[in-house]
Each structure stands twice: as C-alpha cells, then as structure tokens.
Length: 269
Image 1 (cartoon, helix red, strand yellow):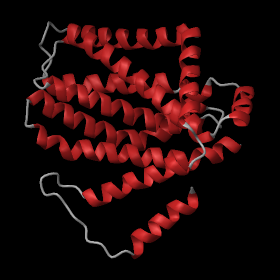
Image 2 (spheres, rainbow, N blue to C red; image 1 turned 90 degrees about the vertical axis):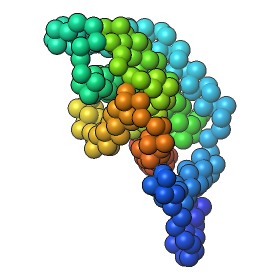
Image 3 (cartoon, one colour; image 1 turned 180 degrees about the horizontal axis):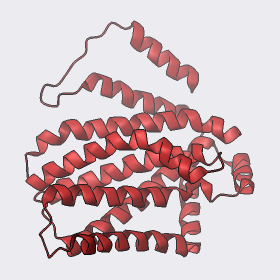
C-alpha cells in the first residue's frame, strides 16, 4: 500500500498539470479528485475484504445488543440533556432564537457522539485484540468500527432531533438539507472519534486523552456543520452549501486515509 501511494504522489509532483477550479463551488476540484484517488488506493491496496468487514460489523451489533445498558445510557444522556436545556432556559414552545437552537443541538450531539464512540476500543479486552489480530486485517477492523459508529451516531442524532423538535420547537426551513447535514456530520464525527479512540486506548487515561486529541479535528468540523445547519434554518439556496459540504467530506476523507495508514502500526502493538 505504501509503495503505490508514494508512487501516486510522486506522479502528482512531477506531472505538470493545471489546477482547475469551479468558480461556483469555490474549491479545488482537481485536488479533491486526487484526494479521493488516494483513499481508493489505500482501500484497494490493503489486505481487508468486504466479508470480514460485514462480520466485524455484525460482531459490534451483537455486543451492543448484549450490553444494552451502554446504549440505554447514551439514550438517557441524550434525552435528559435536552430536557435539562429546556428547564434551564425556562422556555415555552418555539421561543428559542434560531442561532442558539442550532448551536445547542450540535453541542449536545457532539458530546453524545463522544460518549457513544469512546467505548469502541476501550471496552475491548487485550485477549480480544490478540484473537482478532490472528484472523482479520487491521484495515477491516478500523473500517468496520467507523461504519458501525457512523450508523450509531446517525440513529442517536435522529432521535435527538425528533425529541429536540418536540421539546424546543423546530425553526428549520429546509428539512432535507438539515437531514443530509446530520448524515455528513455523523460520518465525520465517527471517523475522527474512532481514529482517536484507537490511539487513546493505548494510554491509561484513555477517556481524557480521547477528548484532548479529538478537539483540534472536531472543532473545524463542528463549525462547518453549524454553518450548513444555519443556512438550512434560513432556507437559503442549497448551492451556497456546496463548498462547506465538500470541505467536510474532504476532511473526512483525509482522516480515513490517515486512519488506514496509522492503525496497522497501533494494531501491531
């Protein structure tokens, strides 16, 4: 994998190409294309296969179903946080101004995501890691956990959005764009938090370390997500959101690529 990726970047360096930009999107689409190609090389050159990813995702679901207290605890945290916000602001229906409504929702979803993903590697015993090391590839493990955590965050964010709407109202004008933003944000949060959780699991104070390491990556993602949500709440033209949405996708692709590079080294330790 490393040889092909370095050859690709060597070709990019010596190939005298012109940078094409789309003025409507305001981003470098040519670089975005090569970023996607780099991720494709990482995925195709790794020794994982889709069957083992499917089996690992099924394992995560079975473990989550057996330990229902963890999932119930996250749901309780989400619902109780929203209700406490309602009591703290002492609000009647639809009286919270839109910017505060937007920022408060995403802060709640962010902390819920941290609590949901923090147990990805921390809860696994050393014997489990040793057993998986002998039968599956490291790329399959990290990709399966990213996919599972993304689905989990989407479910939590959707439940939180529904309960948030009932308790604090819903000033969003473009519901479709807001739901798309929830999906993109869930994948972005899952990718970052899963990678950081794999690094923090090697330390003693893994929970604290995970929060510290994830903050510099999560913060720009959170700002982009809040910006897209604000545009959806105002009902602005969707073409305005193409640039921040593609930027969020680009950051997610970069984090996935870094995870595919780094996790095999963590896996060996």
